[in-house]
Image 1 (cartoon, rainbow, N blue to C red):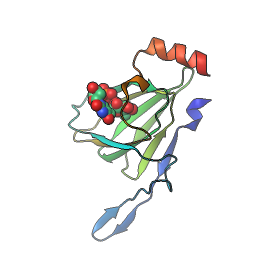
Image 2: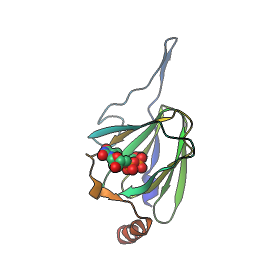
Image 3: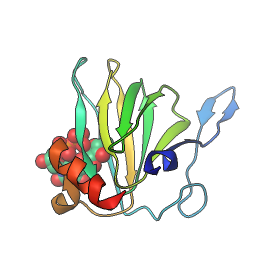
Length: 137
Ligand code: T46
């Protein structure tokens, strides 16, 4: 099933008395070439984001500050990923519905994307997504 392609990627931590460092290298420890980076911050507690799917876009979402949950749905199965550590990110393949919720106060999500912003890649209606998965599963 498509949802099984989603996975936690552990980028590791280099710690010393000055603090912690985590690095990401394009084409090395992520499964696509990064074409866009964006970040989401100042999210009011109890606010949800997402509620859409992408036809082709692949992404990695990293909780660089605070925590939040990402719930993925492939038209059949739902899997919930709590993201609580800045070195542990979630790889989201294309073709999955996502809900992002349970943002802690002051959380920041950094997102690495496989392509430029393109509104035509979004499926923003759940009924359209169910039709899409029916056509694509
Ligand atoms: C996703 C989750 C994790 C742009 O103009 N350029 C961009 O690169 C992005 C990401 C968004 N926008 C515009 C589109 C909307 O008018 O910014 C506005 C807010 O975007 P949206 O409602 O899609 O935000 P989220 O947080 O619900 O979703 C975003 C990404 O759009 C989406 O790909 O997977 O973060």
